[in-house]
Length: 89
Figure (cartoon, rainbow, N blue to C red):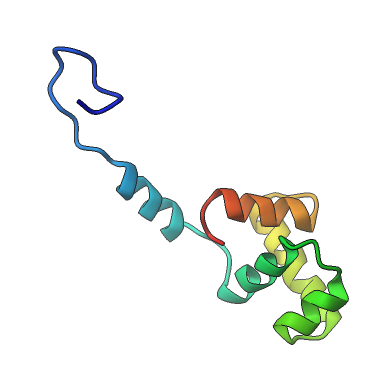
């Protein structure tokens, strides 16, 4: 019996995989923004992020600002955490 199914109710189709796919498909972030947020998750400062992903530090800040606005996060760390929670990174 599926965990959400009550005794005596018909079996339901598990939408877990579909929900995951839907979440991943709805990602508003670009590949480059996701690359940068992956490095942010390590706690790296802007200079280290730039060295790892190869744009200039100012460009990293621009990508982070855009990503933060897209997900409604106040900090780069919150944006990275949100992306991680959603399964985007």
